Image (cartoon, rainbow, N blue to C red):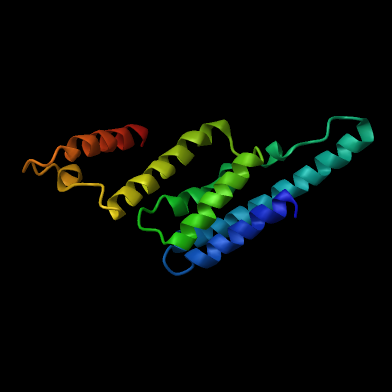
Length: 158
């Protein structure tokens, strides 16, 4: 399966999964599909030009678009997103990264949502204390300091 078809399938799956719980993700997915098709048309034109002029064949870097990445970032941005939505979003970001279809400036955004999900997993696993959530100051077992440091790291990224 070619790169564009894979990305479009991921966008469709994301939109279907986000349909009820996150309608903004569904809308962003639909807009990204339209944008992806436009990029595909540009890519085909570039391939045709390159084959006739002995130019270098275009790469998937032509698909570097924040509009295509945005729905996946938006879905992974929810700390309470369900498992299937996260799997689709994270797999898709990995596909875009492997295909060199992510702008260098978007690396920080991907890192930010990965930290959000790591923070959510830590909370789910009970690795966070009450001290880290609000700093109640009731004295803990010392794990609050590490959690506060993690909260500072997350705050520094956002």
